[in-house]
Amino acid sequence: MSDIRKRTGKKGTTYQVRYPSKATKTGYAYKTFDTMKEARAWLESGGVHRNQHKHGESRLEVTDAIDKWLHICEAEGTDGNDPVTEYTLKTYHYFAKYMKAYPWDKQASELTPPDIVLFRSWLLANCPSRCVARKALTHFQTVMNEMALRGLITANVATGINISTNSRYERPVTPPSEKDFLALLAAADRLANSKHARIAKAWERYRPMLYLAGDTGMRPGEYLALPSFNITQDEVKVDRAVERSGRKISVTKTPAGCRWIDLSPATADMVLHYAKHHAAPNDYDLVFPNSQGRWQSSMDWGNQGFAMACIEAGLVEQVERNGEVVDKPKYTAYDLRHFYASMLIEQRVNLKKIQRLMGHRNITTTLNVYGHLIDKVEASSDDKTGMISRIAQKSCGETVAINT
Image (cartoon, rainbow, N blue to C red; front, side):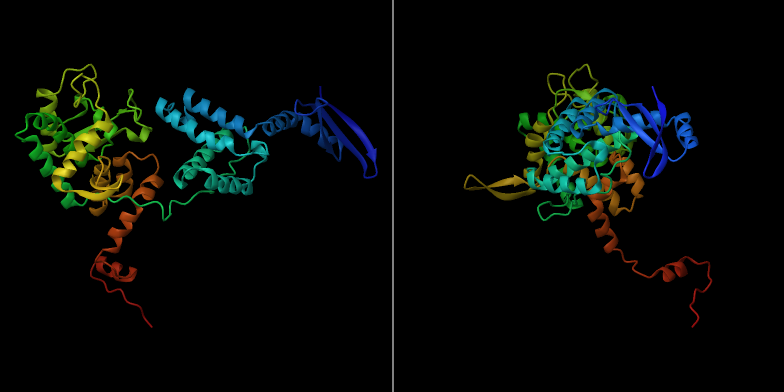
């Protein structure tokens, strides 16, 4: 029960509010005011409840906040999103391992930006790569943001503290050129018409997959889970994917992944023809099932199918393995997605539309992955005039001049 006590000391008379608190050893906490009126007003306005809540915040250990975030991700989804997939949750647990390994010496609500900077330095020194450190810090920001949204801490002090993607150890994506992509299509055509029956049979399925991947920029997991009812003559709907673990088909990684993409008529005909006449019977309405009627392994497609297309097209590079120089495919199946994005950029498609077509949740992702390609296109532009010259070019016959 709360009460107000009058106290007289060297500083004069003050009024002390005593109220129950589980955060102290005595079971009570105190707040002092200069006048009885202020003390009563604080009590009547719900000050006790607010302070009890505040003291509750201070007891939230950082590791407990991380565990709570993991539970929210699994049970209901963070920030209004759907619960994450089993594979994504497993990935979150991997990064949580690094977050929880740091020797936190403060409660979650007591952290300050300098504390997060020290945490960043620790991640860079203790994670196996800069990429892992960056992702661990990004996930920690999500932890703090969720705790702040739920009122368990007052603010996300990790906001704005990042690890740059710029590193001499990280190469920007280098998508196939248009010439390389056309060489891959020609290789797929030749393999589908091979005199070797086994190769021709495999490429009866792989050929429309390769065409579809380059035509739409879909992730491998998305077109491997594609149902035939999601394809029309001019577009394809993406709303599910094979989880990266390969164990099941689930929803797309984020709600932004659910999207419609324009489809070239020739690609649509090829894909629909295969689904109708050659796809094995299956319970998932898959366009590209394996012979057992289940979804294909993305690893098998990449290592056996797409790699063969690269070799057939002559798109290989020599690397040393176990003391021997061998040919390695120059690209991966995922690089067809990067090719699609690079063509959108080269055609100067609106950046927000590129974000939507790629299924990126945030425009930041689009810029981080493809910003260097955007810069390259801008730098090669022939239109390098100043702003006034540009205005003059668009004027309705009026002269734009500067009087001196």
